Image (cartoon, one colour):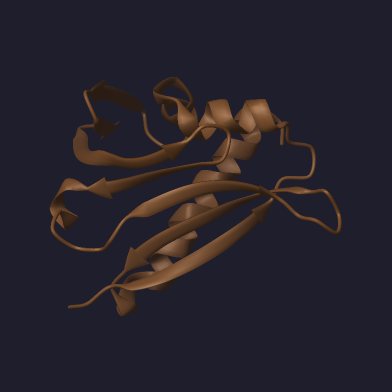
Length: 127
């Protein structure tokens, strides 16, 4: 089944650019909220949750801006997930934009999972 692309915006009122970047752009930061552990070998990130591992290739990274991964199971497709930092022009508020793909029947569950993970990011960083 074909996956569909979706974006979720998370305003982070009290966030600092450097703290947010360290949380989304480094293996140590990702292991504090996204996964239980992250190992990097070349451009492959291995994310561990309890006894489950899933590998993704780093596709793109722009320092202090965004990081994009593609799960190994999605290789050969246009599917990826991206974490992008942006500052809203009007308010100056820092926002994290998550871009992901999911099968139509799984979009709402995937959004709930992202909401849970971003809540954990907020707790760990005080954002």
